Structure formats: C-alpha cells, structure tokens
Image (cartoon, rainbow, N blue to C red; front, side):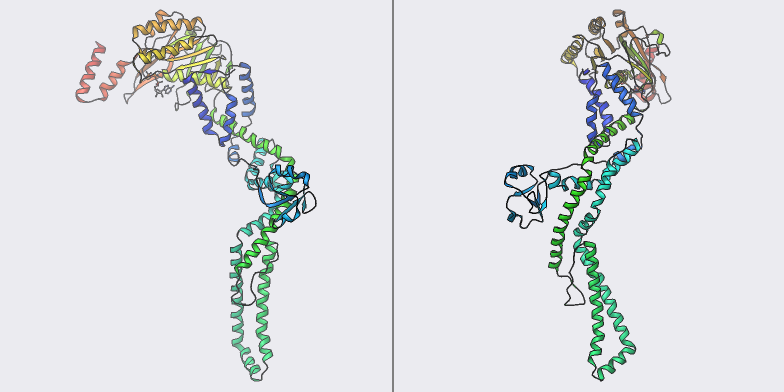
Length: 575
Ligand SMILES: Nc1ncnc2c1ncn2[C@@H]1O[C@H](COP(=O)(O)OP(=O)(O)OP(=O)(O)O)[C@@H](O)[C@H]1O
C-alpha cells in the first residue's frame, strides 16, 4: 500500500531522497532507499520507526571514515589462458561448461602450458570445481581489496558486530611471499640493471685498491720477480684479483637467486669489467620466473582458498551490510534533531517544524484537523478541529514554504522517518496532493488544467491531504470564490484534509463556516527596509495582505521621480 503522490508531491519526495543520497558515501547504498517509499500502512510505518530507533542509536559518526574505504569486491569469471585441464572423455562436457580454461583429453595438448591440471593424473590433481581449477579468481580480488577487508574489520569492531574480514586477511597473508616475487618480476629489468651498476661499482673499487697497493713496496717486489723471470708469481697476483671479482659476481647472483627464489645466472664471465648482462638472459630469467610463479600462485591460492572459502558468504553479507550502515549513517546525518511522529487519527500536526530547505528557518507549529492533546502554543485554543484551512497573509510571508513544510513532514512520516519538528502527529493517509502556484501560465488553458487536477484530487474515497497554493491567481476573484468554495465543501464532506493559500480569505470564510482561516502577518520593516514577517501563522485570524508595507519600503528605497510617485501612493493608503 504505497502512499499515492501527485506530481508535485512526488517532487517533494524526490528532494528528500536527494538529501539522503547526497550524504551516502557509497553510491550503491541508495538501493536501501527503495525500501522506504512512503506507505499508507500504519503498521509498516511503525515497523520502520522501530527499525530506525533501534539501528540509528548504534550508528557512531566515526564509521564514515571506514565506510568510505569499502570498495565493492567483484569476483569475475574469467577464461585463463595459462592452464589446461586434462580430463576423462566423459568429463569433457562438464569441464567445458565451467568455461575457465582449455580442456582436453590428450596429455600431449598440455605442451607449452605453464599449468597442467588434471582429473586423471597428468598434472596437478584437481576436482572439477571452479575453486580448484581457478582459485586465483576468488583469491586475487580479495588480495587486491585488502584495504576494504581492513575497513570491514574496523567496522566490525566499531559496531561490536565483529567481522570475518580479519580472518580472511590472515589467510591472505600466506600469499605475501609469492606476491613479493611477482612484484620483483614486474621490475625485473630495473632490478638487474641496478645489480649490474652495484657490481661494477664494487669491482671498480677493488681495481682501484689493487692499483694503489701496487704503487707501494709491492711494485718493487714485482719488478724483482719480473727481472728474475718468476712470471708465475706475477700471474698469481693478478689471478687473485680475478678471483675476487668472480666472487663478487657470484655473490651478486646468489643474492638475486635468493630474492627471486630461482637460480640466476645472468652476468657474463668473459669480460670481467665492466660486467654486462646479455638481454636474452634477462628474458630467459623472466620466462622461467613467470612460469614458476604461476604454478606457485596457483598452489598458494588453492591452499588459501580452502581456508577462507567458508567465510565468503559471511563476507558478502558484511559487504551488503556496509551499504545498510552507509544508509543509516546518511539518515542519521540528515535527521539530526528530528523526532518520530506519533501516528493517530485526526490529521497532521507538528510543533516547531523546520523547513528542510530553508537555511536557519523560523520554526513553525501547525495543525490541519484535530489539535492533539500535546499541542499547545500561543493561540492554539482557536483551533477547532477543522479539516479545511485557508492560509492567508503577507506577500512573501512564507505561505508556500508552510505548504512545503506540511508536505515534508507528511511524506517523511509515511516513509517511517523522523520528521523535522519537535513533536508531530500524523494520520496515515492514502494520498497526498500538492498543487503549486503556476506563475508563468495564464489564460483559460491554465485555469482548465488546474481545475481538472483539483477535481481529480476530490474524486474517489480515501484519506487525503490536499495542499493548494493560490488557485485564484489563474481566474477572476469573483469566480474563484464560487469555484473554490464549492470544491472545498466537497472536500469537507469527504473528510479530506485541505490547506489552501488564498487572498480571498474574507469571502471564503463567509462561504465556508466549517473552515478555519489562518494568517501570516508582517510586523513592520527592519532598518534595511525589509519586511519583518512572523512566519508563525495566527490561528483563526485573517492575515492582512501587506501591499502598504511594500509601497512604503519602495518609497524609502527609491530616489527622485519614482520616489515621489511611491510617496503619493503611500499617502493614498493613509487618507
Ligand atoms: N519559516 C521560515 N523561516 C525563515 N524564512 C522563511 C520561512 N518561511 C519562508 N521563508 C522565506 O520567506 C520567503 C518567502 O516565502 P514563501 O515564498 O513561502 O512566501 P509566500 O507567502 O508563499 O509568498 P507569496 O506571497 O509570494 O506567495 C522565502 O525566501 C522563504 O525562504
């Protein structure tokens, strides 16, 4: 049972949704709003209120920081070209249906694949499940979203609801080693070039020191050895240096081997200085390493997945719940200072309501229908339970804004949300109509359209709230009184709630003894010659229009000839 809204009431609903959507950190969370469409089912409204009361109290504002770090984790089915699956004839169809990699029954086809998986003993043993054939498809998205998992873990702590994310993270820790080696593989060229530079530096230093030692006593010894034809000693000396350089090269390769986890032979021994690395050796190393890492990543992923697979449904649930938390956080931010309305039968009433879209609004209290027991403000004894109210008063006094406020309170209440008022009483309705004043359309066409929608609102049964902004603006005042008067009688007979803004309050009052006439009044001009308006309507009293004040304001603001004219008009008021 959704609450029916006409076009302009729907507009109000949309702007409310917009306010909440604007506060969402994750755009996907907006799907939660769908669950809070205005409903005319009182029980459902109370259920939603109970939900918000329970959940909003637990939402700490510190959650936002962590919610913002949660990214959706997308597990994608992919076709992996690095592996082949060797199966038995009767499994081919099932294996192919998985669509994860090449499938064959002949082991010879495995030639060239880094990864050979098999159900019949030709490679790494697997069962025909995605988690065994392509565990990386599960594990890699998790690995890449570790930040999300960390955020989930924090959110679990903050809400006291716990999280499986920390356990998933611990499982993923097993991948650390192979992932580090993959990073090295990505920067292999630079890594090798750097080693090469380092090595040449060390060799250079050694050669320098060698030439220095030669310049001393040894040089004389050397010459002596040469003179006596003892060449062996000379070569031994040089050989020593060569040996030391080879040690350096071996050392460098050993270190690389350790870091990469694969035996590395890169540097040529033919020319010892400067040492160089033939590019084809880097390529060979890259290929070998790549193949090895594929296998290792596969095996590790499988092992990790075995451990964390049972946690994934819960993780998914938590990810969804983050959207709920995001939604609740947005609602909490939006509804700070609001209160949950009481549901009752008697109309719409609120104390100190604050317009959602006016900055720093003057709070306004209002009643359409019966006055609830808890509703007591100055002059509220004038309220006699009228379902039809005519709102009159000063130009720019806030009449349209009050209609908007009534619609905001009513729609929020039907969404099950708290409303922007100190207290509120709302009767669950079937339909809300809002007819805004049409400023730009004139003539018979506009009048006909307006009349038709007004009549449509009156047609049919149900509990209705009808808000109308200045219907008479599009017809002649005399005709308007007759038309509006008759239509409001119908509304009254059917028990609809109506607030209608009109400048014809005096005439309508005579026509409609059952209706209340309220007035918003200006109190004067401030020092900047702006109208001072009390936005709070006076109950049961016609609000005087304030053209006189407008004229005075203009007379004081203008200069010269214009001023003279305004002053003359002003005098006419006073005579
Ligand atoms: N409760 C309020 N607190 C502060 N400002 C308000 C309040 N209500 C209305 N206003 C401001 O007063 C101005 C006029 O409001 P609004 O258009 O509702 O008046 P109106 O009586 O419908 O005017 P009109 O006579 O043109 O139909 C707007 O700028 C609005 O923001």
